[in-house]
Image (cartoon, rainbow, N blue to C red; front, side, top):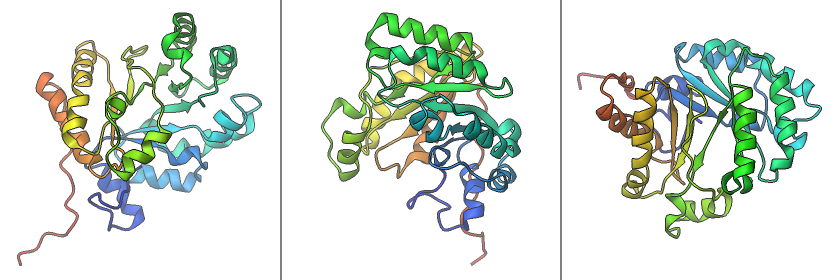
Length: 271
């Protein structure tokens, strides 16, 4: 997402909002592609608003992952890949988010699906079935499958969020919807991707991400190029928090490039 009612740039025309967001952050989760495949013209507009090194992590459509469960999905997959082609190198990874019912017994299906995907893209998989986090055999099976396909495992870290009862409407809503899975910080590729969910309280959010500061800094020192997405239940301060996270990592790894200077929302005047 790159628009929110409380974010800077929300008052801009729709065709300018991504350009403004890209001056705050250099990566975005493409969650809307889960619900509908964009047109090529839409993807071309996204490309025009961003630099070639901007990172889109695009979620595969639910038709592929949830409805057909990675089986007999050639047609919607071809349509999706053709639609996002104008993004070119901006497509950092295609995000395969699997339903909570996708269990270790379904890993052979995932293996076949990954084996049929074009090598022109990188792929990252998010799982939510509890066995993938507490069953050593299931963990090894999934890691071996992903490693064979050079695909990444995306952890969705909700541990800080679930550490205390909810205190706002947005937190109460997220409490019933977000997955409760253990912390995981093992990278399988040179481009790890992390999704972190904090709280609407900034202090709790920043306290909860401290171990990710350590992990991200270590990955950078190892020569990896991580992408970290920062969420809160209401997402009101997400861009500001993302920049703060980046600054904290950069304090540990000074050679990490700074984020761009945000574009002013209002035109500068002398009066």
